[in-house]
Length: 407
Image (tube, rainbow, N blue to C red; front, side, top):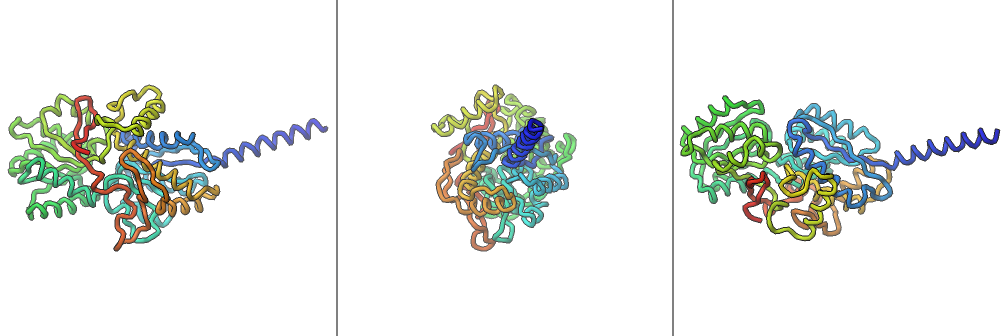
């Protein structure tokens, strides 16, 4: 009888301990395009995981685990993924991917439901500028409201463009860039300019027609806002032109989000002038400091043989931004502490992100109070960790690596 009781007590203890152990796990989510832009999504995941590995995936007595959801570029599917995150009693924060439209479309839903969202890539300026001091989206990435002028300045000053042609996605991301780039062109004395819009379904035949029209219009360079899939189609059609008709391309960084470098190979790229915006850090540039060398060695260990040199890291900016953003998250968690009540913890972490009280070393820079309380009139950039001083232009190298033009 006593043996039976002891066994029952032991089983209850084991179950209780197991439940307790499960309760001590908190999940970091990602909602991104794991189908069409897998490279960028995986790079972001690596950045998150390497940063947490530095603290052994444990903070304030809680184990950290990861859940990655695929929205395939669809805003409705993205909302469903966000709903899963909100409903998970063990989910702490959710990271996004390269696409701006899911965040633009769901911004109000995210804020109204207090879904703590970290953005390491998507660039549309609208995303972080929710008109409330209780703002639940934080970005460490390029911000289109300020990036457009950097791209235009490079096209006009460095590429010596006189008649640039804007070739932009027919999406909210493209809309935002049209507004900001048009304003930047006015600063260069260009009141009227040629603009062409294209959809995500653009194929080779349609791209060929667009490129012919741009050339026939007398444009002397193309300013491109596109992700990998359509960007590769467009660039390939430019390469199909006679050498003397191939216009230089100055692009947003969407080209680096997938397998563009495999479709438009290094041999093809030698026949074209192609530059794109990046943040001002790359593992592939010659000058590396001890901190970045240490982080890359951690990435090598984490990748278990798939990455051995900087050129092996595809969509590297996803890793770089996600790593830095996760370092800020970790500091905010240390300041806020964890209670296990995720609704409460999400809010205290949000407030801590706005009040980081110690410098945090990252790859792009050392962050000193990177975020603050948002105010639409007086503090419009409050949830932007980077600024134009952190933006550089880059290009692909011979080994498909990204090389910064200047730092």
